[in-house]
Length: 337
Image (cartoon, rainbow, N blue to C red; front, side):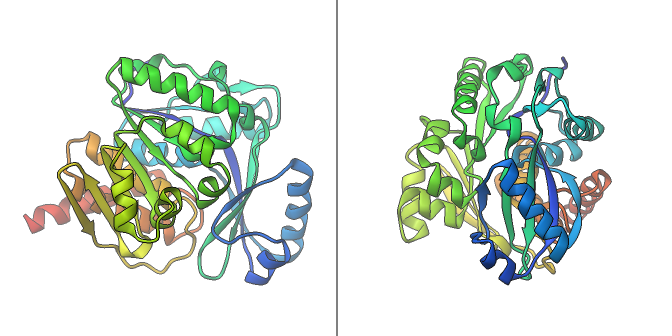
């Protein structure tokens, strides 16, 4: 296994995207903008109603950390993804898709069971609401992960959605210990307000004694710290974490490190689908930092990439789009220099 820059662990999910009405979300008792876990039968019933009454937009390989890893790799980094899929057609589609994007995986990820699926519901305001059946990924353990590439990686990336799985948290603990033993920096995303609300203890376990880089959005930051204003939240988050990136949608992001705090302006696009935007932001930011760019430039690149994800349906761009945007970004930077 070749050395990689980024070693990521996360859920493996096939996304089924639908454009839905606000009334449909209300009828299904779904909380807009969050992820809700469900069982296979309940999701199958929802899927049938979606097909009958709403607008189908397509299928895509998803999973938060996987989306981040694809963005990182498409921009020029090397990456490995640890996950668990079923020995079924969707599992093969999932891993083949990652490999086609240049992401390394292992056959250890394949086991008996059903590959997880996520109904991604896009409301008229472009917000994504997710209804997730984790399938076999709910039972992700260290046995499905080849930790060897982690020993020489630059970054370990952990998605907050793993907070709901007892076995996944054990695997993350092992990964964190190995990363620290080999001088690998650790990044983590809080992932979703629902994880903060319903899986807080699991998130705190994933975070443990802190990370080198924490990603969250403003709502997650406030909820996780039990505060009502961002300044108070930042002071609490700084107690454990070296660097913090708080995204604010169209308003950009707040970047915090031990020596400074600053805002980076957002970029206006006609929003279509927010699914995967935070994942793309994290992937581009990690790539830029790993490539030696400063924090402000990293945030500017991340905002460019994530805003383009928002402007289309689906959690990822076409692979060539990442590189095209990066070239445009570098040219614009040179013109401003």
